[in-house]
Image 1 (cartoon, rainbow, N blue to C red):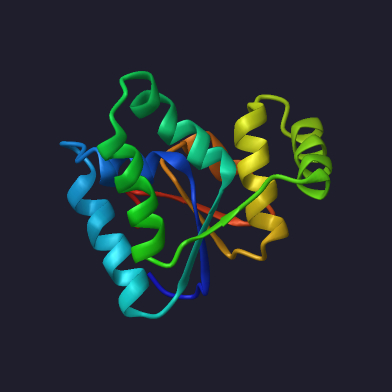
Image 2: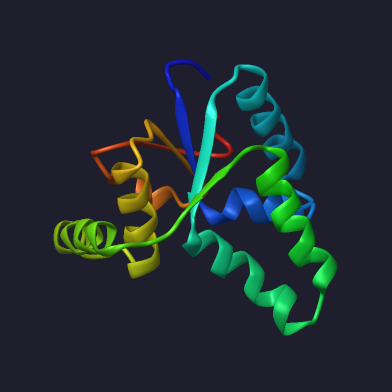
Length: 140
């Protein structure tokens, strides 16, 4: 993949990698390695943190909690908070794209506000968003 500098990671690719998904783990590993080898930036938001960590906390799997934060640190992934600016942008996104869920709109808004030029997801519906290039794991 060429023509990008800063990749926003939606939650699904993170889950695929950390939980060793049978269908996508190797592909996502290759994507992350490519991004790091090409010295590009990766970022995500507190939404990803919440979505990923819910199950490990529910099952008291502190090893998975630690693995998430180790992954973020080891890959130098910037983890942004959701603020009022992002919330306003997400509201505008939901107003325009009526079928987008709130969490997806917040993720897209975070990517826009953070200046990302690529949004890595596996949600094909998000590809209709016009402000940032949304690409699925399969398409990479």
